[in-house]
Amino acid sequence: MYAAQTTVALELVNLKKDYAAPDGSVVSVIDLEHLAIADGEQVALIGTSGSGKTTLLHMIAGIVAPDSGRIVYDLRGLGGPPATAASVAASTPLLDYRGNGAPEPKSDLFPQGVTDIATLSEARRDVFRGSHVGYIFQTHHLLGGFTALENVLLGMSFTGRKPDRAWARRLLDDVGLAARADYKPEKLSVGQQQRVAVARALANRPKLVLADEPTGALDPATAQQVLGLIRKLCQEVGASLLLVTHDLDIAHQLPRVLTLSEINRASKPPTTATPALTTDH
Ligand SMILES: Nc1ncnc2c1ncn2[C@@H]1O[C@H](COP(=O)(O)OP(=O)(O)O)[C@@H](O)[C@H]1O
Ligand SMILES: [Mg+2]
Image 1 (cartoon, protein in one colour):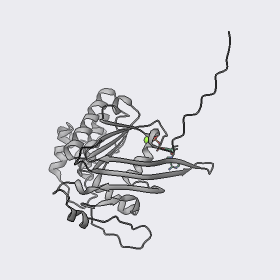
Image 2 (cartoon, rainbow, N blue to C red):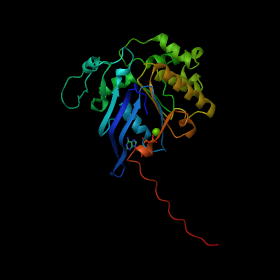
Image 3 (tube, rainbow, N blue to C red):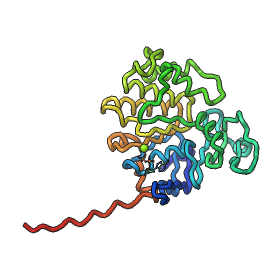
């Protein structure tokens, strides 16, 4: 149950994605009727390998387009004064640029509207992601030619806004790497690299942070530290968090835990075990 004033940050409705298998058959990977994540909520999503976790996060981030369904972000809770009936009416309407020939506004960063990114072109989804979504991968995905600070600043470079160096330094300080700001990734430990990746994901004060097995490559103590930083920084910027993991100890530290196979109609029921041959000895 959400508190009375809580608003939904992200809502998925009838989201579907099929992939073609090598033999040409069509495999349904995601078939999700409904999922809502509230403003500032922190949700863990558990799933076995191959169950479609990354596919789901890629669709939510706009990296991959769904075959059908809605991926609705409500940015009205972002900063600024609370939404009023008038501001909602005046906010960005649901956009549909797909195939309708309408020109795409270039600089609009979807500042306060309700946006179904499934209706946007790939280029517009990229702009949306750069402005409002933070993504943390299992491995850091930092750019090797750039320092830690530059990597965090690069996280700001897709928005059209001026990079905020003070905020980037503050984030590196928050993840305990103020003294490593000028180090390139190869000079950092795996845990430090992942902490830079956490700082980068928060660089734009995103509406939502998506973390795909963010602690999967770390030892338990470092995993715990990185999880704590992700949660703290999301709280600090008011971002919602959807964290995918197959580690139950990690998942159960978050206030809400979902199991993908329980909400994904494309999940195959567990294969019935072949009855054991009875051997009466
Ligand atoms: N681009 C693709 N083309 C075909 N099949 C894919 C593609 N991406 C993922 N799949 C398939 O979709 C299923 C889910 O993959 P994925 O989302 O990566 O799972 P998870 O992250 O839970 O391990 C797997 O069976 C995988 O082989
Ligand atoms: Mg995956």
